[in-house]
Image (cartoon, rainbow, N blue to C red; front, top):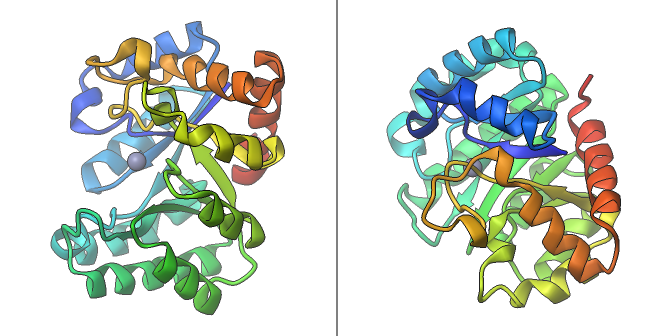
Length: 251
Ligand SMILES: [Zn+2]
């Protein structure tokens, strides 16, 4: 399996990251996409990649933090771009709106430009902001590779992602007790357009609730997708591994 989205070098995981990676391997997670959101997590992510085969890095300031850190981190991301497999997570979050909407849009535009220049795909974070995300992407990032991470939108929004050629990624949220909402969406999105992710250290799946999430827990997400799609665990594992490997051009 591949965990397409984990914050391995976030402060919550960093002190035990080698053990976390080891447990992931034991659980059958051969590769992990590590999402770096600031200078320290990127620096540590690049070191981790050196010593652990199967770890790949992405970088961007999240929409939450662009006001405080967007300006200072952008040149660092740009300078490291050759070592990355994607730009992200970037996007819009109007649910929390920790940074002003205009700032979020401005940085999204910077990251569109960087992704186009570097030829890397984008990882989107989007909450309560699909209308603006689709409009901006249609203007500035048309017909290019992207994945909508930790999808929590509607079926119509999933359709609009698919129409744009984007991949749709599901996290442990789909395993929560009140998650029946996702059944219809998962049945709707074709398996060859689906990614799996943990978003560690956040969003531990149902059977591990209350614990800090980590990539070794990803099997529960695979199980849920297999159940709702009426296919085997192995088929979900095989297809998502292929989807994620191709998207990030993993070796
Ligand atoms: Zn994330």
